[in-house]
Length: 305
Image (cartoon, rainbow, N blue to C red; front, side, top):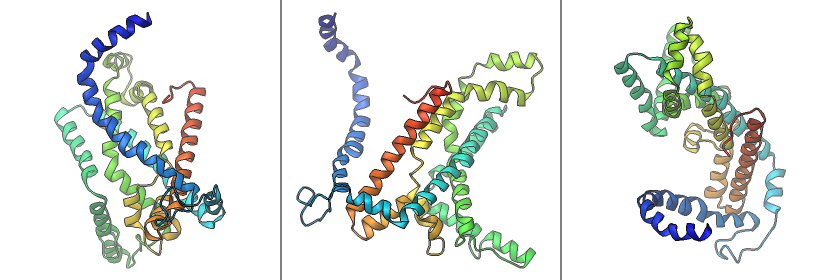
């Protein structure tokens, strides 16, 4: 049997070579930009000096990790990063599901396509543009403060307030990416058998009953998988978004791991310490994914592996 398989491999390759060619750019991308740079993780265990180079820099073992965990910044960074991530998880993620169901329930196809196009468009705007729009609405002389001064003779310092930083970050994420995030859910909704809705209609079910008993169970596996993937990036913040929204007055709540790596690595040139933070994030994210995947399987759901 093994010999037969070996004999057929060249023939099978000739039949499938177009698919290998199509897959090659994606494989090269991951090899060049995701796997090849991993050799640089060795710097987390060294006191890197650009003059000595990577291999000649002295080894320090786990000293960089001890220094990172012993600083007061660690707990602040962890708290800020997790709070922003979990706010996105419990507000942005459910809103994406709700928006997908609302689009799916539209019956007039022309209006449905127009609505989908409108909610997709903000995704293609840069965060610089989004920040400019935010200033136009929430800045000291923005639209909201204009009406607050006109109606209530007061104003609010949204952009420099610790209390308003996280809500604004979540609001920006929803406005920019919620529509784009509906694509996978809409594809899953399109795979639900229409006969289920017809049978439910015969039994007297209304739209809310259909959503509860047919739509949500039909996309449950997709929700679980995307939730697991979301947990895997819970320690990752959108650097450009956070960087633009951060200032000296809200640094107490805006200082996250990605921003810390930028300041330590690119401004202070402490590459070893920056890579240590990045390695910690990767390991912690892997543990979160494995734990959530295990919990999902215990609850009878299909995990990502």
